[in-house]
Amino acid sequence: MAFKFEKLIVWQKAIDLSEIVYSLTRTFPVEERFVLSNQIQRAADSVSLNIAEGSTGQTNPEFKRFLGIALRSNIEVVGCLWLAKKQNIIKEDDFNRIYKACEEILLMINGLKASLK
Image 1: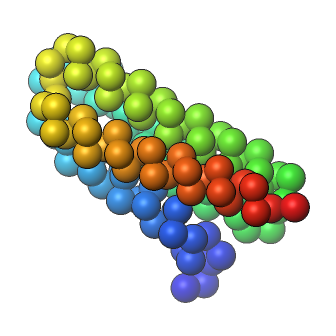
Image 2: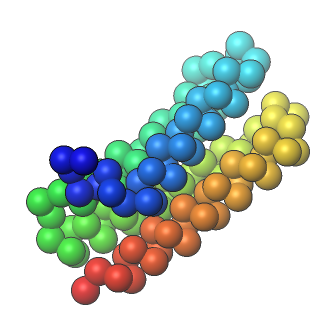
């Protein structure tokens, strides 16, 4: 692995989150293709992209800033999940699976931020 972020388990989990989100949004109604499905996809992708961007060649304070953006994107995924659940677009088990993944990523990002001096 040539890049520092590729070794980070939180980045790997964020990549998995995007994969799960993309798989789920393929089941969304057509009218949501450019609305909620697009929003949750972009938010999920933003988690891993900000971890990657902040990890390489940045100072610790700058990396923390990017981790903060990744954290907010992760929370945005959860917000989108709630919207999809309330609109009966997703099933309870899909909601719970992705929600749990987001909780895990939240804890990992916070742990990584805390480890940076």
